[in-house]
Length: 402
Image (cartoon, rainbow, N blue to C red; front, side):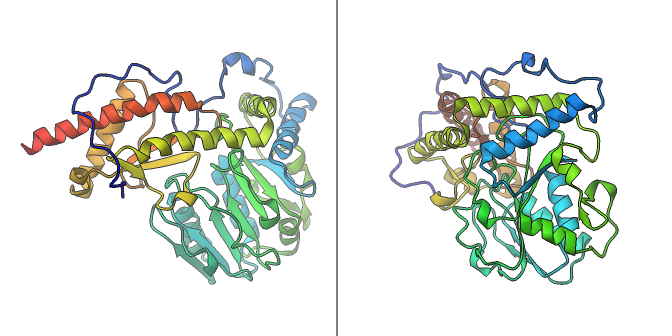
């Protein structure tokens, strides 16, 4: 709940704030482009060329090598570019690796629940447990069994709840730790020694355009691929082995299907920008600064609170906010959704926050992307507009109730 020590509400119908965000793009995917980006960044793209030709293939390999370097990925891990964004990368891992032992799924927001649904209802694994928690909370991490595989997101893109650490993952685990890190990679410190599969997409923290996903495999994951044959048919785009051995070509830039070389060039631009500002530490610092700016505002603003209940678990990328005003919480679910939609619509119409509504399956509120490509100055400029928009919605509510 919002703190009782916060000052009172601002007067209804305040004047328009004087400063607007220079970049109003706060979408949680595709996300804001890096500062200074323009179409000129893509001028070197290999357009109209086969992705298997030497030049384009070298660009794909460069995405892999630069990604591994920026993230500090261990040298013995494989990293590949795979179809269908992060979703494709996760599905490849689930369909290719699961079934050798029991599996636990940690689910606390929309996408992690989707992985549980796929495992239970599509793969129909007989020994699968879904360990759930409602939006705003984490499930009981300690209940994950180290003898079983475990599937989880590192950061809940639709809930704004992230893992605080990997202490709950056993160093001597027998199962694989399969991590969907799409809104965490490049903004949070991933403990590679505690993970076996990590996935993400280009269109999140580095602001790339949608196309392919990234799939990282530890030596333990490779061993599983080469020793375990799934009981179900394997579509072509999921196949990572050939004659029982890992298809190493996938992890050298020879993609399973045709990538967009324009999107590849954009991914490289984001990686080069990350290197130029100081690499992973700088990316993390930028994201954390954005969270800190919003946290300071939330602490002094009575009508809003974080959806994440524990401060230690609050995401610095997908920053999810709930409306805590008593009149709002007294509304039924349909009326709450309508009021939250009106709030996001006002921000959109003023051109100060585009695509800032909550995810469609999440509790009504706002979702502000705070990843590394977002300038903290734009976050700070946005905050008075959030107060302004809320005052308009509140006034309309009071008028309707009169």
